[in-house]
Image (tube, rainbow, N blue to C red; front, side):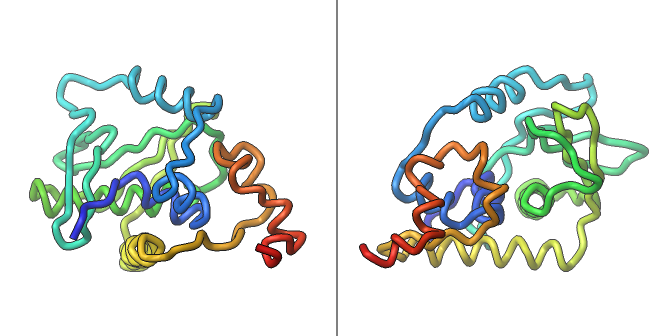
Length: 188
């Protein structure tokens, strides 16, 4: 089994079509969101007793990737993921699923159990706590299964997300979501 990038769990949970276009077809474009994200991750601040850029993996799930930041509070391990965007009242589901995948990989590869973590939204300068529940771990399993199914597919899936999610997407030009929504995809 080939290992898949841990960060792509977020992509497939957000938009399976985007996952297919980026990971399988290689349609990667560095728009301002992507460039800001790279810059944010490079400049992330870490306290002396914390770890940044910690490599983790799961042989069971076939995932490998990086935990942006591992903090310790009163002996409790906390996983932190940095995101460029603005926060909502709760962490976005795709971000929470990615964070839970990091926690599973951290436990399997390093023997460190995290029961919760945080998504830091740079534009809002706030963190949103994510409790790692069985339902969230099941969402990780579902996302990984979807990734593997899409890897075996000869065609990308249709557009499955609402138009609001397409606005700042880095693969919008390759995706052409408006055409898919109008049914033009059926002509191909």
